[in-house]
Structure formats: structure tokens, C-alpha cells
Image (cartoon, rainbow, N blue to C red; front, side, top):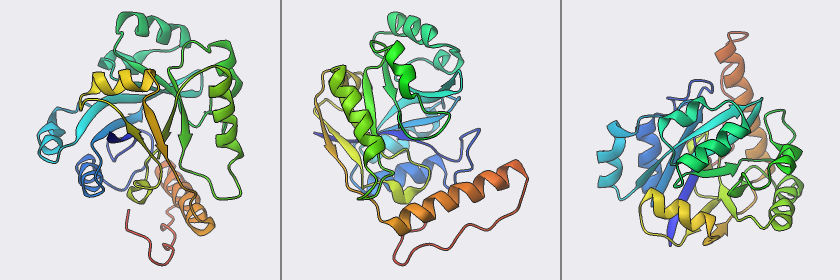
Length: 241
């Protein structure tokens, strides 16, 4: 079984202000025993060439990917060529899948209350999505958004993957997938399609959730130039990043 993260961002992201490099992401994943990592920047498929040697030396398989914004909604496209960063409709995603059978389409955080989440758009394209994401951002009393994703997956007989949607390094290690596959991108994607996935997840604390939300809000405001806000103080005992 491979310990896998299929939704991660880094400082190379063209949209989000992420406080660690791709190299630091690989190092942290290695320290936590991950076997594979998909780097899924917003609307940009990162050329993984400069980091493959580092990742291979640490036993990590890098999976190409992009979190593509399509009609304002986010879709994870994994193990496709770089042309995936230019698709502009879900019909084009369908055509991409026909052309490149080894790719994987995941619905990320689909029922969270944000305008970029797919929600019921998935009902119009149920066959398009190979898997549905259970995401890390929930506390013991707020599982309902993930519950809706699990219910949709059951209703449409789709597998579920557990991802951390990594924007801060501390997110790694609480929610991830164990995938029964050989250590290569094509095998991992095929295993997900076949449902050979074990979910590992635990709720985060309320203080951690509040810190994360405040950290992202401050970074967003800073990136837009509307304010120069310091990042909030970390909860006691929390890791940097």
C-alpha cells in the first residue's frame, strides 16, 4: 500500500500565496513517509522535471496534475499532459479523458460552501468523475460537507480519495489515501479508478481550523495588495508552515 497525497500546492502556484517551495513540500512528505505526491497548482501544470531526482532519492513518486478552474469550479486533473491546464469546459475534460486514458479526474472538496466547489454540477456529469475527494478541513462537529461527498460517491458508485488540499505543510499527515498500486503514476491512477483505496482521516481541532482559515485570509489579502497583514500566531505546539 502506498501512502499518497493527490492534492497539494506549493509556492509555484500562480494564484495562492503558499509559504513553502516545491522542494520543501517534497522534503516534508518524505519525512512523513509518503510514497507519492501529486502537485496540483491552480490552472498551471508544473513541469516536475527539476524535482524528480530529489523525489526519487526520497522514494516519492511525483504525479503531474493541475487544479483547473472550469466555469468557476475546481476540478483535479491528474496524470494528463500539460494540455490539461488549458481545458475550458467539462465537455473538453471528457474529450481529454478519451484521448489520454491514463488520466484521472477527481472532484475536490465538492460540497464545501464556496463558489469554486462543484456541488450539484456533478449531477450533470456523473460519469466524468473518476473519484470524489474527502478533504481534511473538518472538525469533529463539522463533517457534513464531507458526508455529502461520501453520499454522492455511494449514489454514483464512485471511489473516494482522502486528500489534504495542502496549502500549509502542517496539513500533511492527518488525512491521506493508502492506495494498493505499484509506485508509478499510471498504476496509482488505475488503482483509484478501481477503488483500491483505504481512507485515513481524522478531524482537526477548532483552534487549528481557525488558524488555517485566518492564515489563508491574510495571505489572500496580501496577494491582492489590499492589506499587508501578518500571519496569525500558531496554536501551541503547531509546526511551522
